[in-house]
Image (tube, rainbow over all chains, first blue to last red; front, side, top):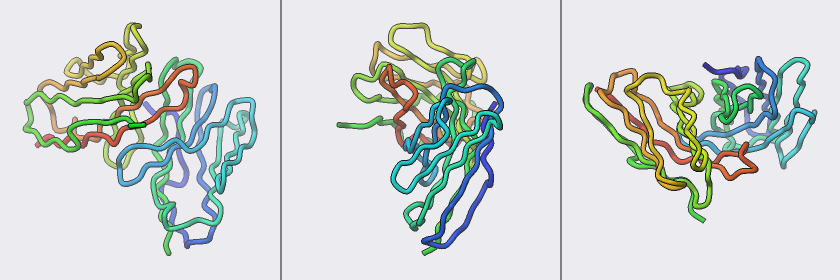
Length: 112
Length: 114
């Protein structure tokens, strides 16, 4: 079963706009990661935020984590058409041991 | 260096046939994971290998699914007596402890069971 749930399931924006995706989870975690997937193929790791961190930046990406609400958000600023992809959050669950638990993903379309 | 590779890229099979999917992890990565992704959905964990430890098979959906790994190299995922609901993309990932939380994914094998 999947722990994370992304919101929205699909998002369509114009190039240059910001895109915000949210992820909620259910159990305590060690860290939360965001991955990107193009065309239903392999995933690419974007950013990891640990449970004791509240915000992290990487280029045009900004991730926040609120462990009290068990939620995270991924913000992509100044979006580009090349950002079109599916974005998944994944949690390293304290109880799960070794694997990541993925959400259902947000499908982002950036129109040129 | 080379990333995670998987073969075949696509596989079409008939219901009831067995299929074998292959994963070559990044050299030196001791951890290897298999996931299943149904169309439009997230990833479901299947199995995890770490070095010579017993694999974590807790995600395998039925006894028709099995996986092997030779040492710290190639892994094969076998699905016996395939069913139409097995149709999905099967993704392999590897990682290098202690940074085991960051996983590097292969391109996946798209399986279609007719």
